[in-house]
Each structure stands twice: as structure tokens, then as C-alpha cells.
Length: 353
Ligand code: GLY
Image 1 (cartoon, protein in one colour):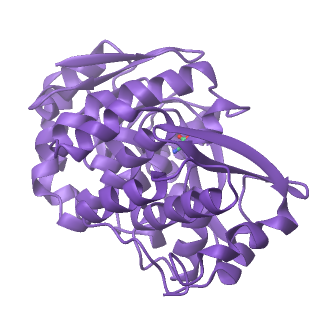
Image 2 (image 1 turned 180 degrees about the vertical axis):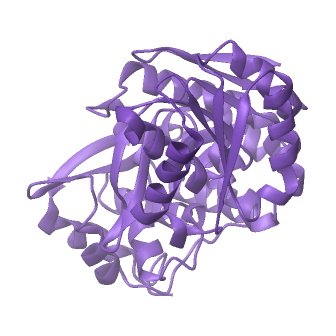
């Protein structure tokens, strides 16, 4: 088992090891305070792992309850959070009790928000079962639900007390769900690690990349917990990716939007003379090799218009993340009105195809 320390205001560990699901209760015992544990999972994950994890918590002396909700982005809304809070109240959970998020990014984001709100804040444990949730969403304390106008527009920072990653769960993932996690892995390489890009190029298995990616994310989050600077780099591809998700009516996966979003950023940066030659081409090749999309039919104008509501916008400015060279990205703040001009060059190459 590997253990990675996340040095936030209240530090916590991310544990990575095969078979850890069955040890979840004992591991959580040392990290949380009370005995009550409400375990949240969606309808896809519940039949696979819920009974096992519940048994693991009960063996460690927890009094458990479960809450299962429909799978997918549609359920990531305040009404589901309200139902979770009502269930916690019905169970009689108190301030020292805990929530556990068993599943992918949607589950972790919603469970985290519910934990931030219940009795003004209770502990929660992340037990991610997708690659995307292991390498990104479960670490760093971003919690949120969607509003009709966009993704993750209602949320809070609330760090988990523990993250338990069992790479065995990656074996049951549908290929597109595994692929979307690879988009976040490639993103970490593009932001700050040429060595990670090398490992991806050499064909490393996703499960073998989890700990290294958590270390990268942990470093960034530990230096900038509240995203006042460096953490914004983790949004590479997201401003455009969220716009694509919205334009598609949330029919594409988050990671697919991020993949194309990164290419929009890299191609635009190259054309603007802000990025070294070859960076866009390598990213495109890596994404394609991991079965991720590298083009979209939506035009640059449509994407720019939809990106205007991005939560990274501050007044009339928008901070975009642009690859600068292999394994290094930078932040650039531009007037929001210039976004369309910046990415217009992508039509015919990445966008409008
Ligand atoms: N997913 C980006 C972040 O946690 O900051």
C-alpha cells in the first residue's frame, strides 16, 4: 500500500493498494471520529461494491446506512443533496459522524458537498472507484453540484479525512470510463511532468499511474488549497471541456471534453507563439492512443460563447491554462472578450470538424 500525505489545513492521506476496499472500515477508524457512516453510491456502483464496503465498515464497528441515487450527471443537483441530508438526519447522524463516497467523480463531489452542509460540516471519506476520481476528483476537497446554466457552479471546498483507492476496481470499468480518467492523467503530464508523459507514451497501465498522479495533485493542492494561483493549472482543458459537455447536453464524458479542451488550448497557444513546437502533436497522439476524442463538431465560436459562464471567469477577465512546452503549462489572464479570437484558429483542426 502506498500512502500520500495531502498537506491541507487539516492534512489527510490518500492510500493506494489492491484489495483496500475490504479494509475500508479499519482504515477509516483511524481517520474519522464517530461511529455513524452514511455510504453513498450510484445505481451502477452499488451492485458491484456497496455490500462489500458496508460489511467492511460494520466489521470495524461502524453503524452504517446507505443512499443510492441514479447514475450520471443528471443526478448531480441540489435536490439529490437535499435527499442525502434528509437520509443523514433520518439516521440520526451527529456532528462527529461521517459520510463515505463510493464511486466516481459525481458521487464524490455530491457526497463532499452534502458533508460540507450537514450540521455545518461533518467528516467524509472518499472511496473512488474510477480512474478519474482516483487521480483527480477525490483529492483536493472540491465539492459541487451543477446548476442548469453550467457544471459545478454550486459548491464548497471541503477536504475529505481519508482517500482510499483500490485499483482492482478499475478492472470493471467500461473502456470509455477508463479512457476519460486517462485524460486527467495526460493533463497532469502536460501541466508539470514530462516524466509522466514518458510513462504514458511507454504504455503504462492506468492502475500503475494512480499513486504518481495523486502525488502530483497533492503537491499542487498542498501549495494552493483554495486555488488562488498554482492550482488553477489543474483546470487545463476544463474551460473548453465544460463548454463542450454543456453543448453536447452532457452526452459526452467529462474526460472527453477535457481531452478536446486541452487540444484547443495547445493548438491555440502554438498558433499564438506561446507554446513550443510539437506539444500539440504529442498530446493529440497520446490522447488518441488512449481512445480519447481529438476533434469536435462544435465550432470555436460556439465553444467560446459557452465558456463565458465558466466559474473561472472573474469580472470581465478569464484565466486560461495554456501548454508552454513539453510537461509545462502556464496561466494567462485575458479579457473574456478575447477568448473567441484566441481559439478561432482551431476551426478545421480541432473544432468545427
Ligand atoms: N479538478 C481540479 C482541481 O481539483 O483543482
